[in-house]
Image (cartoon, rainbow, N blue to C red; front, side):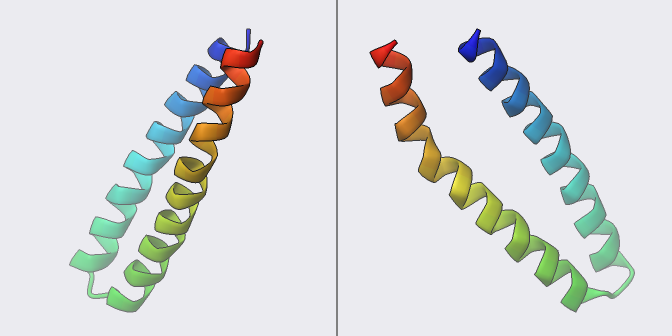
Length: 64
């Protein structure tokens, strides 16, 4: 059940990331570089947090 939940959350995250990329592209096209830069940095910090948690998820999954 944990694996299914992780897959669901991963897929949901991928959809959110795709939408954010589109939003950032629109901001850049409309000349709102500062706002696009802020959103990019927020996405990057979120991504770093997720990547940082992956080893712990793998260890816990093997333990069960």
